[in-house]
Length: 127
Image 1: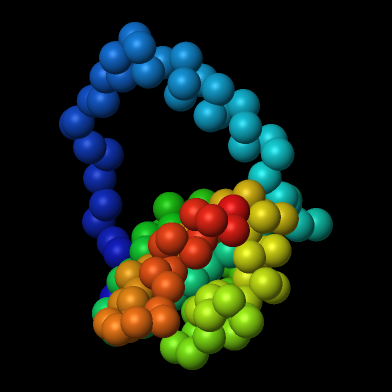
Image 2: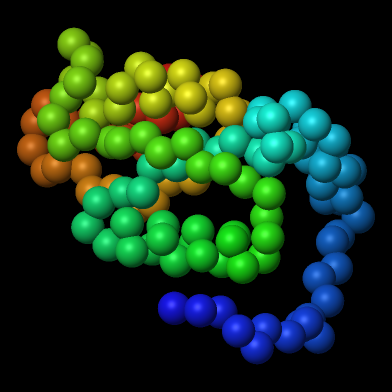
């Protein structure tokens, strides 16, 4: 699907004063994000499962249409444990997020039943 005919929005976002310092701090943090030799940011990508890949592909097209300088580093979330702790995410993928300092994660389903760890809980714990 091609995104054409996009126009500037008339919507104006006003940031409450109590958040302006937090926003300002966030802007300064982006200098720490990893870039490649082309000057593009490197972002870890987990496409997801179920409808996740479709949603992720749509988001990638939006970023591309907006000409956001990002190169995606694709990593998989597994359906079976890849660690002795029962994690569905590899140590390599965790290290990618730590190195890049930013990631995009599509929707994932946590299997129902005992012995499965939520992906979101695993990510929070490991990061």
